Image (cartoon, rainbow, N blue to C red; front, side, top):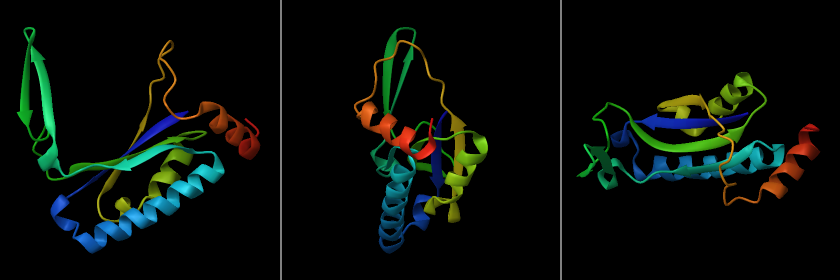
Length: 135
């Protein structure tokens, strides 16, 4: 099952050195997850100051600068993983460097039938998953 691991934290707590260390640790983790067949995608996000929010009300589009909600913690990045169950997804979330400073929300992904495959090479992913897990 696919899980989206959403990484939240206070942007002000991330000085450039801490951020670069987190990026390096996260890159290592993505390689470990790829080797185990769990990796589907991951990326940090630009600061909330770069966000644009879009709403459509009564057929009219409203575009505003900034994130959707003013909150104490901001969405800073994500991992998309394939895990056997919630326990495995939680174990992976606990390995994400951002969990030591902020919060990682673990959410199952609804897989809708009929959607086109993503840009990732699904055959390579499926071959790797089968080799490492037998699934």
